[in-house]
View 1 (cartoon, rainbow, N blue to C red):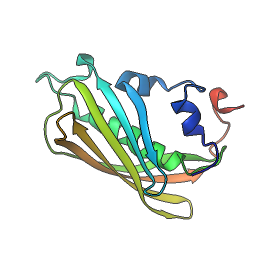
View 2 (cartoon, helix red, strand yellow):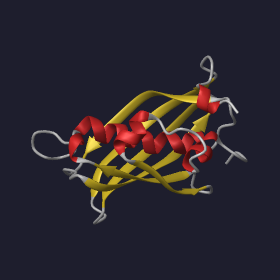
View 3 (cartoon, rainbow, N blue to C red):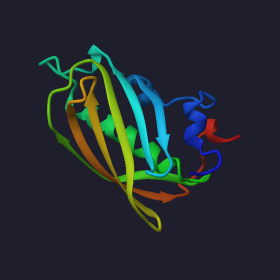
View 4 (cartoon, rainbow, N blue to C red):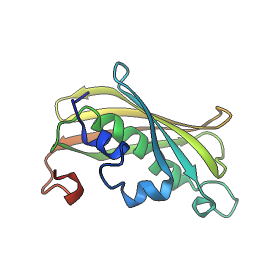
Length: 149
């Protein structure tokens, strides 16, 4: 882990949380440096549901991305950024509104490419969805204002 990664500044409330993360009800829970694994939690509101009353699949994919991305960001020095260049989601069981636990971890890091996996569970521990994503590291133009310190 970097000494003070950007992600920890977000988790501590020192930097503005993205609008998407706010909509998802995102909250940082824990980071395991040895496992390069992040645990987050979502408070999924009714507005995120499909006509069946379940959390919409695209929202679950966004939750997985918002769990796997922080695992990458915990290892990056500012101003290096990570962008998702490939993502896959497997939907295992329906997700109801309420608390959803998210886990993201680095599987492999090779130069400027990072491979991750993620998992979503309901409060009973039942697996909702799994995902994998590939991130590309780089300096992508000017940093957003909240990142500059």
